[in-house]
Image (cartoon, rainbow, N blue to C red; front, top):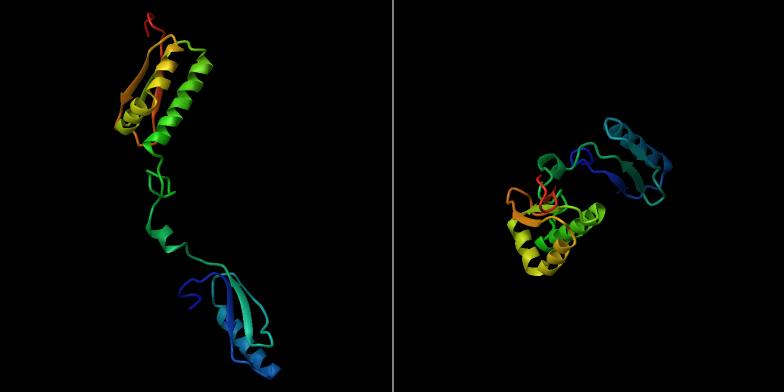
Length: 164
């Protein structure tokens, strides 16, 4: 069963209480012989006075789910993906950082999925207008549904009046 189910970790086997040490030794030897054919690394303890044997076994195969499934591209295997609001807040912070680094010179074009753009316009329009006033170029928000929910693209734009 250990090999068939590829069980790993600590395993405790409860044998019938044996009064004679020679009987316990025979069972230990038989168990060692059977386990020696196992490819997994096994450490076997001695049988205690209550007929218990403890062994540790390292699993050989990867878990069935790992062998038959792949990591979700949308969530990276976490089972969660960022909400439109969560992505929108990250965009606002990134815009603030980019404007601070450029000292407000030029503008930005931000491309994001429609639900993120809608969230930004509905919940952060004042922030976006305030940020637009701090830079010398336009601050454009464009829909790009080719992007995943938690992805966006940002590129710098030249200051107003300059050819780019």
